[in-house]
Image 1 (tube, one colour):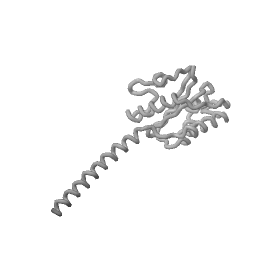
Image 2: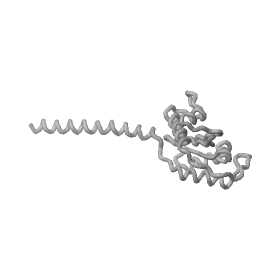
Image 3: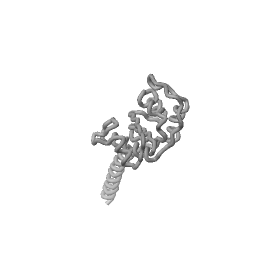
Image 4: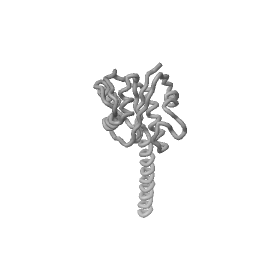
Length: 168
């Protein structure tokens, strides 16, 4: 009887430990594929500080321009694109399925007159990604574009997307 009780308890413990292991794997996969929390205020401050100072992007000087505001639709489109890049293992402004900035903005019902996009991979903080974009002529030009009035940004894994726009 005592041996039977020990075997029963051991079996229950084995089953419980197996369940915990499976749950952990599922939870880890869900966490990784979800948008990571970003500090929108830090991002907005970094971008607006650069815009307020003016700067040279490559060979072109951009004078100070007005601050941008955070827009949740631009953020949603940015998260969607970062998730697409993460889930489908690509790094481009156009997805393998043909999605572009224009189609992504239409999907979130952002009616724009002008828009732009920056993407990055591999950075782990808001400061790092903004610094690298400011060192790149094209990305810096987007940040300094005075025609852009709003921005949103999303990160999934280490895929970052920054969207700019002006509503009609």
